[in-house]
Image 1 (tube, each protein chain N blue to C red):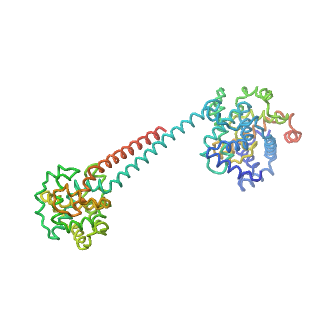
Image 2: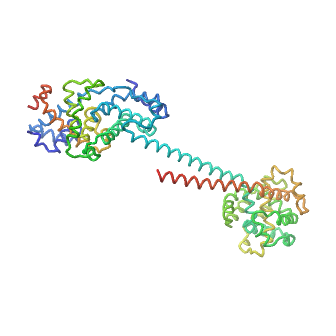
Image 3: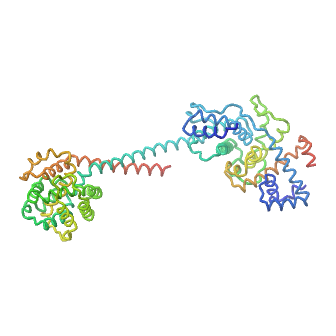
Length: 208
Length: 353
């Protein structure tokens, strides 16, 4: 991993010349992260896999347009946009319009009804995510956030991107990132509090 | 609970504070408030715990490899994100058309340039020779004739205005005798002139040639400049007998001769007869560099009696004009056509894009 950045640069340069093998090297490097982000935004294994695959194809097709040095952010932007598209296309819920996804409103419980069976699908035979009870609670609370909040929490807190990177990836302003992140955290806190009995002692003591 | 009493601004400040994203003044201000406001402090702690919990979520493992295969890339359909693909493919197709248009444009421009530079001494001098160039070059020869003291009447009868107008691009038929006459009567100066201006008209035609081709609107200034340039650059690399610097000086003074403005059509016959040798022989010297050995053969076609090499060159030049010059004109027309067509195609694709 020490020479990882230079390896990545070589892979990018080679992939930009149309070399599929080199691009697949980049895929292997970033597929876990891409799938992880897609899953946490979409909260669905199958959709996340589809989106990840299609995002990789899209990235390969336009990798010659990539400029700069932050390939990870560039790829994550493609993944995030693919997630937005997926939410628009697949969610037939009235609140799933673009305005609601992008909006700043108080729709905190985006698609709560539709997402209810989510946990059941996750527990299926193709289950890829081993999660403790605590993790399940957190994921559940994440899933109850509106998509626009969830994207920012996933990018900033789960994946650890800076505000600037999160703004660039999600295509929103820095101020909006700060604002959405603070509200999302507040909503998550409220959600977790409701399930306080599942939480570690320390958390319960702080909020009791 | 404290939650309800926290303003969105405070919430945002606390959130940014957790990430170390506050300006130093904002941070110290918030820290002072945290020291005195337990509710704010409790809010901060709960937010911090929440963030820590979320950050504890593990990076998920991809359920399978998402590496691409060429078959995967070949099929454009499938998947939920189908909306991406048609856009990309359409973009590629547009680019291909635009590349084709640009290639056509480049090829057409190349064609035009080939036509221009290959037809340099042929087409260009021909046009000058045949049309306006007659009148432009009049002062040159006229002045020279005056200064050199050469008699004009010798060749005047052989030409008239109608022959000039009628001849268009090929002056050979009617003006050739005149040319030969001129060559004959004023051979010394004509020879020198041919050699001297050999370098001159060469650079001149390109500017005047396209206009002559397209609209016969060659400007007099260009022609005048050309002759001035011709006299200035007189090195006579071609003419072996051009050991006459003073005649080149004559040509120079002739080119600048103010009688140019006073020329009329009445004087045109004398003019047309004389400039012909000036221009054709000068251009011919270039063309005829390799054709020199044939100097004697063209003169057989010539009614003129003079065996001067310049007549041969002039004749050679005319034969070249009639044949090759026409091809080059066609080349230019095709090239210009291609330029226009490809520009239109480019504009169309870009507009549509």
